[in-house]
Length: 398
Image (tube, rainbow, N blue to C red):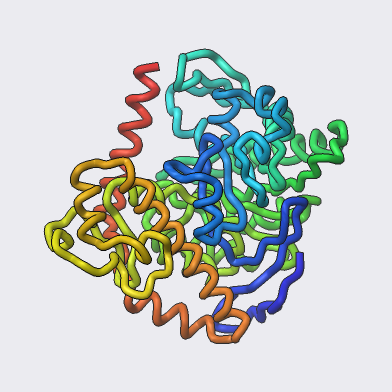
């Protein structure tokens, strides 16, 4: 990894611009990764995702191991060939998805046994099995199995989960080192920092995982229901304990204000389903905050959702047309809304990188956060409750 502006700890920001080399191309950070949970970024073709400025995407190990199966994907030459994505790719560990299954999973030292949310079939996922699946998927970056603690949890529960994550990390490293070499699909392994909501545990985990020969580090277990102020306090405590020479990935965090805050605290890679998920429900990002395109005020709006936006949607369609499509629940809206939100996030990341290289990021950060109005904590909690209810409903129906 090349760090183009080594950050000075005493500076007003830890933001940094780096370049990562992968078998499928170069990645310039900071960067947001669109999420292709089931080998697709919902509603979009790979070409449309590329056109938003995406350099790398994330796919989900848990979902793909269940459907269509990693062996099938392997037979097509891996995920890149299967879904026709030409650029770099990262696959997660499946740990968060297993965590969300609640009563349908059982944790032991060996791994996690869970029931499929699709058909109720039993599966055992271990650190070794997880890496075997990810080898068959063939992404450039892979993550090991970890344990994500729910919010809230006790310090004792947090330590137990962290220590088991550490033991699994050692097993994953051994399996990764000893597995058969596939020169046509070179991979790099990230370690996952845990510690739940205890700053001291976060620092301990960062030092331990950072001392191991992982290519990069993913910060897990945040944005799982805790207040945002706590999330940033925990990340602020974690960053100084991370090795500066390794790329840093903040798992599952992806609202515009979170992207800027995460960059400020020294993160390089971000992923989240939020931009495409809220788009499908009418939420579109603007520099002033998220707007609901279904609101009556957009019914006669001749201009785009946001003046000056260079996305395909804003260059070609009026806000009134998007309002009509969203209210009519037309499929085209889901595509156009997703394009806009992804382009917003990727343009924001590119602007942040330019500001970092120019030495003006603190001013860029402050100006953006002063004008952008984030969703309220109440709205975030309502969304979280709805998501948990959907997950519980799927688990029960299976």
